[in-house]
Length: 408
Ligand code: DP6
Image 1 (cartoon, rainbow, N blue to C red):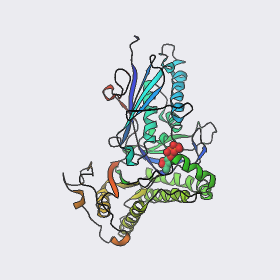
Image 2: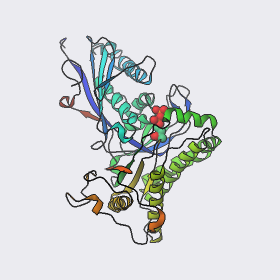
Image 3: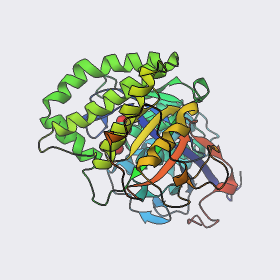
Image 4: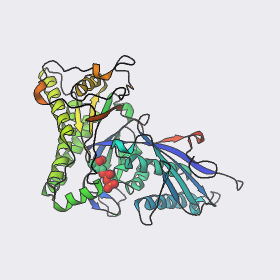
């Protein structure tokens, strides 16, 4: 090949939201968890990170730009670890096996990454970000390793990122090896298994900077007796039961376990010294609405309609089947009016151009007094999405790097 060959690849990766929560590390450097976890991958048509990587002998050092702004790659950082691990894989699995393979693992890389959702939305971008980084480098280096093997590297960027290497329903098996070689993500079921699974993200306004997952979870490990009970006696059974529920498409069991696990995650936060609070009044009100919605529905013999879950912040993610999403949007909007034209009706729930605030509806038999109505903006945005696929390989036309190797 001529010296002008450009070694470059672009990939996108999805966001995932856990239904069995990861919270606690047994090894903070390798990012080995204290319990297994399980998540649903969300559709990257709606929420994604896109990353372009290029290797070139003329690059003076490894450099990374996030949303157009350079982010320093500190030696020994999670970012530096992921990049060097990917270079090592290139060297060991390609270059040392094939004498003709170009020795690009020795070149410095330029990496540009972009999230199509605002960081201000309060959605964790580290999972999709590290997954897209690893996926684009795997493509650049023409690695033939499995997504589970790549998940071991993404895990060292951010624990939850390992689950974004797959679409559908994904388990992160905690593993037992001190080296972390068996702490990896596996597919429980692909997106196509249960495409009716939708998600409604309720973005609650949050001005104050909360406790980060990384520092919060270690405080929990050090101080919470409830976490020890959760690790030993709760999570193993729940992992088994929710995996079976997913395989059987049993929404009632899926919903009950999802809500119980979100509750217990926030309980171990409260059990931490000093205590950590992630949910606020808006979060708790959405819980009350979903509990009442399910109560009415179960009483009618129609089973569960929705499952809430909350991560390290006040936003609610509501999992529900597509047939029930419209009713859930109408209920949420009844209590949380929206700014005009804020809601993106991706699945045409309502007539085109309809005013979302004119779509309020309370289900029959629903006790309206379970919550008070909030002002416009208490829930800033509602994002309607669904279960999606794993990392995608994108064409050169989607590259984030210009010809000179600097972000466009
Ligand atoms: C509450 O993966 O962000 O979202 O491994 O320290 O980067 P680090 O933490 P991170 O923690 C995610 C915690 C959670 C639960 C989950 O996604 O399972």
